[in-house]
Image (cartoon, rainbow, N blue to C red; front, side, top):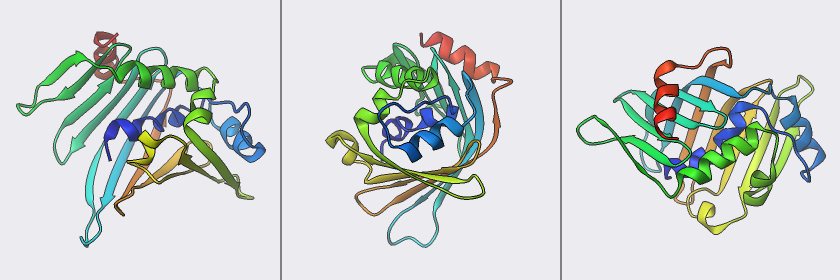
Length: 203
């Protein structure tokens, strides 16, 4: 699955989302999340491919800043950066250097990030069917199914689990592969200066 498709779901990490025309359980889940304009979290990503006994594993950090964009920084097994700002994108090239270029996708991702962080769920509602299940302990599961063909080509369904913050996101792909991302160490008090500096260069 293309990472930019996965990143369309990541504004939910910020927690600052309010549902408009979405179902009551979905509104309850989204409004229960912490509402912050910035977010940093650690991730562990496991990609399970049909026919292989062990998943591919990577770890790193994700940073979301309202009005600037998103940085997805893989630290292990190899260092790799994918970032989207207002007008430009950045990614690590074959030589290990961060290459910045104009991207036709940057504004789409940055606009969705800002819309989510500001409490506008119109983009979520336009791209996904949403359903939610809420546990008696405050835990919840949010299920997103693509409405548009572009997303459906790469993702059959996305399941997001959490409580106050998102703890896990699973992406089920048409070829049978499963991408699971586990999040920890959520913080809105401090943003990595390296990530902020990179996003400012992409504005």
